[in-house]
Image (cartoon, rainbow, N blue to C red):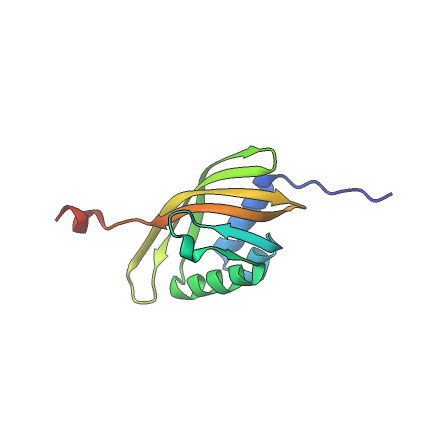
Length: 131
């Protein structure tokens, strides 16, 4: 009889955060199902399906922001969903500060992230916006 390994959403999130901060693209991508569905309600033209698009998008971000660090500020697990608040920061190759904040609501399946509703966006330059 096979034993099913149960992985919590919090453990998956921690694994993803660790892989993100190590810039370990293979480990990061392995956190997602093959048929992963990404929805960005604020930018619907950026919606996509598939783990390979995760690889392409995050590989590009790791290259663009070589010192990128992501932090889960808060999270809560609710059945097969995990709600999390993120801060992702670093400096671009051009030396420009990169800062994004927001929330992600992930769906879980078989010990991986199967979907996300992603509400993360870049933070406006407050000094420029006030000027």
